[in-house]
Image (cartoon, rainbow, N blue to C red; front, side, top):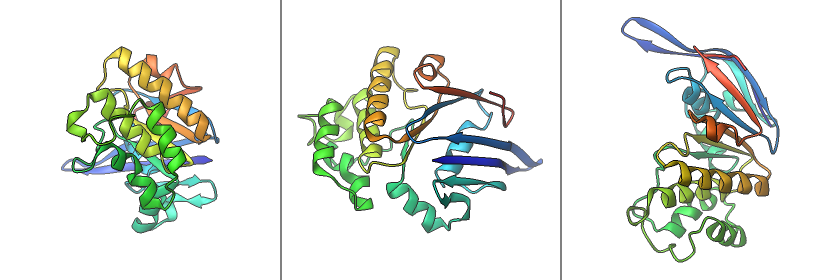
Length: 218
């Protein structure tokens, strides 16, 4: 499903190039879940952004199935995020002018993959029934995160990428969100790559790996 091979990435600074990733390789199969851990600055979010096609590698390759993500144009990578790759950000990034129902359906409609039955199931399973006409500002943090997860899964992506999805939630709410996310991932049979600082959340996934100074050590 996902194959990252010898990926390196540096960023320009006034002092010169700053290496962030140094020859990182990993594989993730359909239905597998992997927690990516490491200290701040170890390259976790950078790797997630490269896999999502939000940035480009210096060297190495990233494949999603038969598609080489690193060989796509900007528009090609954007097209990948419309349907085959779902992304959940720590800050939710919901569309404030749209209600919950429209936010949930947004990515699926954009990808031409809207499925009303799946939308109804997501709405029910995410505990959002009765909230579909509310706007994001009228929701709690946990409710907003559930909408963000539902939006990413609505298009039935091959790969779900999550960057600290419970980082803004208390432990109890975070556990509930993780349980629900993993159950919906299983229902969708998509792969999950999650960046987290939380040992508690990481232990809920089938595999764990750690980045240190831009290199994968486990």
